Image (cartoon, rainbow, N blue to C red; front, side, top):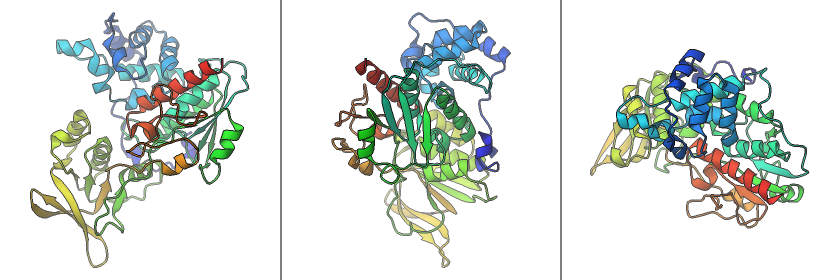
Length: 428
């Protein structure tokens, strides 16, 4: 899959912070697991993977069996092993923490099992059921749709994913911090899901190349796993012009387009969530002269994970709090020179050469308009039953960021899996 991506991309400058264990390292770590009877790690995992069992299988050199245990609950266990905030999920729940000892590195063990078992040339882990005659169209090729489609395919149902971008994988391909997951690794996982019988059609946009009424006519169900929309703007003076980027758009360009040897200079990142922290860390690691996060409230109110912010500080990122953007400043040639902010009743200008806006993304109005009965909530997210993805249209289901406003990849995977199981039961 590496051949389909440009070989000179900025993300390749950012190396893997948690590389693959060797066999000896994996066994040594697996041997530390206590196989707890109540297994708090399972309860902390949104996809309820049987963690002690898959770790025990690694300890006994049954790596394929370990991977099967993971995939039975989470078909995207490979990417989740690398992008999940394990510090606040499974690893954070490990009993070793209470004893002030190093917790089991569950994410790295999960990566070891899933990566080893899905390498090219390895025999299939699963066999799909005979064709059932049922067909499902899935919009968006991100984690929710991939999980839903994969489980449907294993049950013999035809699953066709439509993706508007040239690459599948959703946020895993376009938006995950490269030191966690490179785009080609996400595409490797997409290929593995496709090997289960899933069809992926890229360059197909809803409302332009395909339409809701046709999908409702031609398929037994439609699944909306479209993520979130474009980056939100501040809508303050000076915003139009070079030097100002939406955070997710900037990350996508950094991960997927050829590098032009650009110099980042002084960077401001506006926002206090995990996307803002990711952009700040990436800019710092790519050699920006200085990187400052600008947040309108105090540090305790930030929605980004504390451990991620600590990582950013260690990489040289500075944080300015209680600062509200007022206007962008430009020189006579239109070049961006600064961001004026209001801080505690005063105004000051933060010099900069680039600004990334990580203040949210637009919502799903155009998507909902394609499907009668599908409604949006006050946040602009699709209204769906969180247990099975059902919407106000009996044939339309939805999951992932477009219904929850933006959570973890593992939550999207759980949504997609749950809808697939619901459909399977309803068709029996």
